[in-house]
Length: 408
Image 1 (cartoon, rainbow, N blue to C red):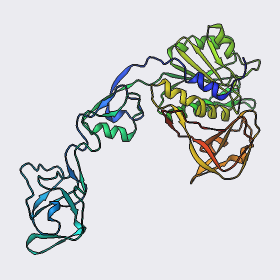
Image 2 (image 1 turned 180 degrees about the vertical axis):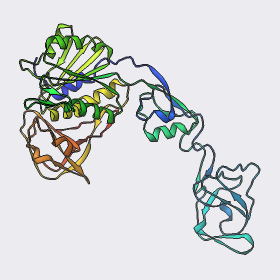
Image 3 (image 1 turned 45 degrees about the vertical axis):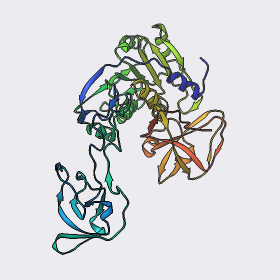
């Protein structure tokens, strides 16, 4: 199969068939990171009533220059039914307190002076309706509070709670299976021989998926055996997504593609013109989608972060799934080999991105991933980057509009 560009691979990823995800009703305290299954409309305007934005005095704008009689006090949550401000009067009001009838301005305490015999004198000029928040100015009755496909962040959940909603309908999570492959791989806790390596990949993959709100099931190490691969493939249909690491290159022992093809799988691509992680593979088998990541830990983690995660966002029903880059200043010029997309790990801090060791490191390095916090993707035609650079932080956001995150 011919090598394809990263943009062509994205087209495949963003056109994968969407799985059928059941809708589940969950308590509002348990939905953080889930995807909303239905639109939510404003059934109670925000604010629900006219209220004070400050601690101060509610009065008539026409009385600013008068000595005002203090009539009473309003606390947040108190019913002001029947309470009215007349000419020459004011009422002490706390933030959130309901504006009494007749008042059309709130004067903060610090801009007034308390006189003898419960009289108040205003010491500054104010505008009509100043320091008053009006009913529905934030969200009008009937307006959309949240849309189907929105990811439920802490802020959005709080907004939904303002409507008195206790349960929310969300999509169930993707069923994701994770495998490692290779005779040389042994599990942490076991004794590794000199020619063997510990199973770094599965731990890293499952941890990164968890950061983005995905639940995944680890199903073990697949040895380089056609029989064992075939046995595992028979279980793929139980999952929406299967992620493997290793066994994706073209070596003699890399049998995954052949095994998938023998069961009628469709291979969308099996090499992307990038470094690291060129041999990444995408396949579909029935309703299951298979991402086969390279076996090198650095390559596999960077591929999962920069290529696979955005596809998973779309598959889970999210509106926003295009990687959203941030702009940073490059600490020093970056020199790369053109003719391919280069994925450069680095450290981002205080607006500056510093490429790890100038981008000159081996794709099978292990410790580098833990020493960095972001990735920069450099386009195929670029050999030198200076000035501003687009990067994807390890914990990135997604947009509902295509965001160019490759530095071209």
